[in-house]
Image (cartoon, rainbow, N blue to C red; front, side, top):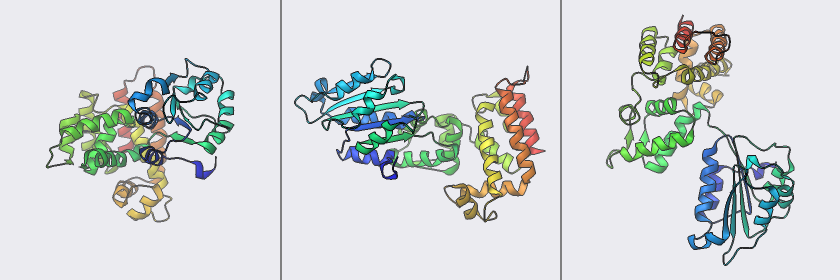
Length: 342
């Protein structure tokens, strides 16, 4: 696909808000949040309410065939500038040939939106190239863990006129994870709870509103491990044992893997002893975000980091039942943390 045809969520929404609608949208990918946001905007704004009864069709891929979608798309609008056809769960469509041929000459008066979730259409298929030539192809990718704090910060600024402290953003990210629909739902509730004269989100507010302890959470556990603070790490583990929802292996193991994987990469940075050098090498938001990696390089050797990564992989497998007949998940996590710190 040509580089000029690659669309971003922001560029698509900018055009839609300006009333610029393409004849074809293929929205695909693992992250349903952006797919839903774009398709919902088109559904709610492309037509006036009184025009929708005759000019808007919303169907599901499991209920229609490709030829039926094409037939709907080739209809002319009734007493309206355009008609809208939205296909949800399009990954369930069995035959794509008719749709592929439609992309060669789509109806100028139809806005066809294909929502393909839980994966992407094979990039070698011609339908993507043809669709990109006449409309919009967008791949909605899952946010990586390190991208979540920036997403949280931008979301609060854009929709709540609010700011958030770095620690508070990391607490929310660690607690909720990369499910953007759930994450934005929690952020919306957080926005509503803020006073009009104080729009700052602090760790104390996150603790009170979302239920994450400001002292015993994944962020603080990572900090204890980075600084090799054995006492603090064990106190947090004890808290997690009594409060499984606050932290468990299924949440913490991926977080630890991400940190130590990046730490191993940081050793190969051209300037591994400067915040800016490590931040650029790891594609972090700024120098402050690299401080944990500089501390980690002081506290852990490269060999130890490789051993830790291997141990994390082993723990992950055992937590899923592989070669682990009866060890409780809490014990697996405690064993992993002990290995990391000693």
